[in-house]
Length: 602
Image (cartoon, rainbow, N blue to C red; front, side):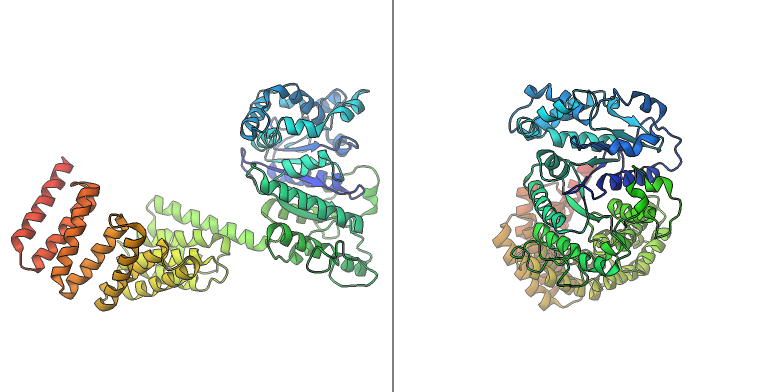
């Protein structure tokens, strides 16, 4: 569930009336409120869920909750202000807003709402943690106020205000549900484009709904993409009032089978394939608006609201009346929808995979906590447990980082175990098929660096080769990530005594880093140093000396005499002097480095 301060706004929209949109919102909100506060004794002082009636022309959301209002809310109902009254109050300070100042107006709206007595708009219920904001104060002047409020002008004059309102709701509640007006209007645009984090499109299977859905979803997503808001918008379709007694018609209108007498294409020239039902419609909308080819079969297998004749009368809330979790009951249908609405970022995700990912993330956090408390053996046990199952792509990076962190901590006291863990982690990475190539390349490189430290040079060579190959294909042969893999490969080859191969690799890295980064860049100096070490091992001492002298000269000039890298360069040059038999020079250089270190320690 969302933490306070990072709540979510969810708009329920339908293109036409009669879809059961408001009923769906009421049931969803009740289920979620009870999941958030299962043990609370009503009413809570600070509701965690709020439902807002934004359908001013045909308000009715409050009707579902009338039996559940607290005595105080029921008594105050007639005089209680609502959503319209809230914005009439904000309109009084319209002059304080600056045209086209999105950021400034967003902050002004936050401050205005923070200083307002927002509680007076809330009608509390006996459903734990749930409050209602009705559409407005229902008096003889209500219709005039609705007709005269110019939402389009208000939006233009206060651009950024509605996003500030969304910020306020997300900071005050875990979930805010907005019941939007039908059709394509200024008000429905506010509710579907400006406010929500998620948009629930409630529809019955018919041509009119399909046409309106395509238009509305396209506009909402396009607006959000071009908005400075910064929040993504995802769309969750909710087929409603499905008649389960006609399975063949259900399959045809969903798009599971074609029938000449069934649904026809909505806009034959727009999509690449025929719109033969609502599942293909939403799959095509996802491709058009998000650039993703998705399969919504799993989602629609579980998400639909069946038609129950008894609920056509009055405003009952099924989840408050039904106690059975049987699939034939409407409560179970709402449960299936709420699980996906709350736990998934998008409807095409698998609930099973997402839950598995969350469980794996929990184990990763547990392993890191063990490391923080010095319980390395327990962290190792968790790490090996993580290796037993293939992680979903979304959590692969976290798993890889955790395994590397555990191996790093374990190495000093359990070298063989740490090396074994890294090799197992590499095998896990090799089995990944849907992971971004650059992420895999970075994982292989980091594992290669560890293997160098562990002395497992053969494995390091293979890992750096994999990293170089994947990074080169994805980013190019001269990209810093590719050069880092090549540098690691050169070091691993040199450690194995394969000096000719190491020298060729290191010379190539030095050439590219000089050209791309310049002679004085730290990575270039590291490349010179690595090549010099290999030349020394080969016996090419004169060339190694010239290179180490160049490194020391540049590090002195760029970093100063006392920098650790400068002192390291002195030690490396001293080793070359010693190998050349110039022991006096070596001793002088090492003595000078020791004096600098002593001075720094004082």
